Length: 436
Image (cartoon, rainbow, N blue to C red; front, side, top):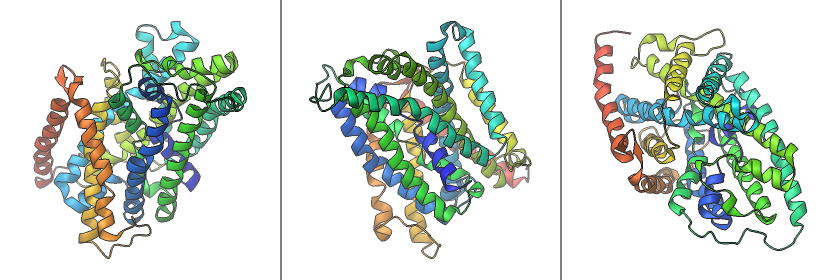
């Protein structure tokens, strides 16, 4: 995979376009939303991108973040890193086929009514599994094409919105929201900016990873921030009220369609709908590529049955792909809300382990060749994780009233962590007995 496909895949692993920003605008208003979208990249995305840039260029191994933590902290914490990441994926990956179905329903509501919606979501999972079996190069190159198609209607929307504004005041940008939910908006913003480490798991399938990973991380970070902020500024200046991005049963999902219809017309509204469907597929596809390399790397270390390390002629761990696809397909039948907080808690816990691995490797392996380094020496390797850690603590606080399967979200997250600790001895028992 070359640099441009890596940027395309990373973009979809993190963003997938402006879709998902609706709740931030609806919960915080334009001014606060733009402030969050401007600040969060510097205190959340940039530190993570720097960490990934150093570790991926120094240890470009298949399995990425799992391998880093395993090498720095040992097999127990490596297993917990994989456990937490895969647990978070169950919540995260169920979202994207649902987005596809929600936008498809705007074109043909009867197609997605009742059980038909679940069948369409299942079709997305199956199609992406078959897509992934062709290899990382195909997934990365297709991400570049999907990126261009997805953003095309937003380019038109931004241009027309700015033309309608044409310097006449601040539109709706500075109008306050009557009842903002800032904690919820911050969590949605963090969720929209997370996932930078996911591209690390396919390092052996990337050309010149020492050079391309740091460039892809920083380039993608700028691209994500730009494609987030420009549409928000444009529709705000054009006068579209923030209250129209209201959080209903499905959050604000679909509001960009209304914005396109109001500001431009039905053709662009249809383009936004198609883009929303592409968003669902475009994010699910590279994330599947990322997560399925983790069981492969664990099998190579003897922590999972050897069958998970089997690869096809394209170098794809096909058993891992099919296994993960089956797990995510089963999750589609659950009535999960869009539990961004629990997703953040589980993902955030694994991310903290990666920052710890960065600092530990700086001290334990000072001679490790690092084509890219987080600035500031050993102190910089520690300080870079401070703001992400504080934001994860905030996500824990924000999740205090959330519930998952009838349990408080934090209790559920704690049980997931305990389950990982209890599962590890079983993997060691298998390894000690030589069961592969």
